[in-house]
Amino acid sequence: MTKPERTASAGAGKLPDVKRGDGLKSTLRGELLRSGDDAYDAARKIHNGMIDRRPAMIVRCAGVADVMRAVKFAREHEVLVSVRGGGHGIAGFAVCDGGMMIDLSQMRSVHVDPAARTATAQGGATWGDFDDETLAFGLATTGGVARPTGVAGLTVAGGHGYLVRRFGLACDNLLSVDVVTAAGRMLKASASENSDLFWAVRGGGGNFGIITSFEFRLHPIGLVLGGLLFCPFDKAAGFLRMYDDLMATAPDELGGATVLGTLPDGTKAAVCIPGWSGSIDQGERLLQPLRAYGPPIADQLGPMPYSALQSIVEKFNPRGMRNYWKTHYMNSLSDEAIRTIVECYASVPSPFSHAVVYAIGGGGVGRVPDDATAVAYRNMRYALVLISMWENPADDERNIRWVQDYWEATKPFAAGGFYINYEAEVEADKVKAAYGTQKYERLAAVKKKYDPTNFFRLNQNIKPAA
Image (cartoon, rainbow, N blue to C red; front, side, top):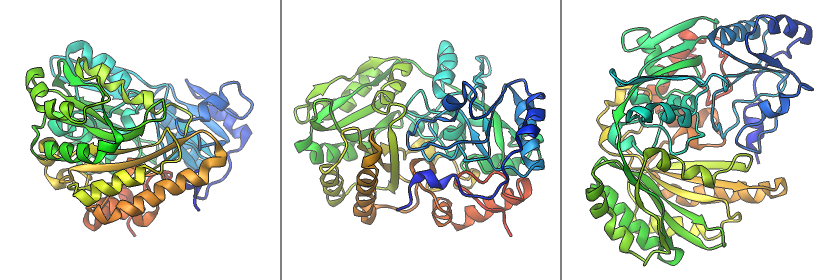
């Protein structure tokens, strides 16, 4: 079985010369770390505990100039490069073996223009950083469901979150980006400048360069209705049926997910995590049937700041756990699909693992024309995300196999395609499937223009057009 450790280690590249690295170090405002340096081991660790790679050097960038210098050094010396933003990176592409890791995690500044309702975030910022700044002005944009998620990784893949059905994907709210290309040049991309590149980075992943700055459109946000609603597992099928019926007609203000998970006492449950951003009274009425079903094990729903809603999920996905994920898009939940989803979860080998029925379809996503960005499958109502988390490396085979078997069992109900950030392993044929033939070919043409040698290849890779 191919494990995710191997995925981002592929690709030819020379090992950096240590003495030449000294020359690079003297030009940096940030740090150059190598094995044996005090901060090296901490810098090479990411959220997924399965990823245990050792770059020959880690460039912890302090600004755009450092990013440009690192890219130019790696290109001149034919060094394999991985790029780290600020967040999870479950597939592990951020860390390479033996090459150079360009680390933006120290570049976390966020600047808000409340009059223009825009915010500009550096490439290493997390959504926690972003929300801390924008919410001070009562503003937000679609940005994941957990504060430790990186702005960069989420946005370039498309970007789901509690506000996705109301305001569209994170990338739909992008106004411009600053990109360091494979040539080591910094370009601005927007609707009016390098528009082909701007189209590609909105959904095409990290294939086209290192984005050092993201400019977003913001929206007013007040108190939201959110929290956790726990339903007994023996009622999970009925709970999912009611949830699907609700989402079929729900206003765009309702986002969130229903999750099959295991409580701290070992009890399995179906847990709804809604994020309602409209009138609190309307939200209370809308969610009342779900709150009455079961009856619930516990009802922890209520009005809260958006920042509190964003802090819920991170408690169930702690840093350092071993992670393996797979996903399907789904347009509906038939009774047979619901039965399969529930039955497959019953055999879960780890109490930390869960299956997420994530509501993504609806007005905000569907209102954006399909050809406006590289994102495909905008009409999908759900992403079914199968997340296995465990602690002991000896349990790798069992937990990975559980996800793969679960994915196969639910495949007959899938609607096609998948979301690249929810996959632990993404091979070439699967990347094509994530975009469809027409969009993939367009992405490959943009790749050829801005990265003809596939310098940025440790990602959900799109090869340059022939």
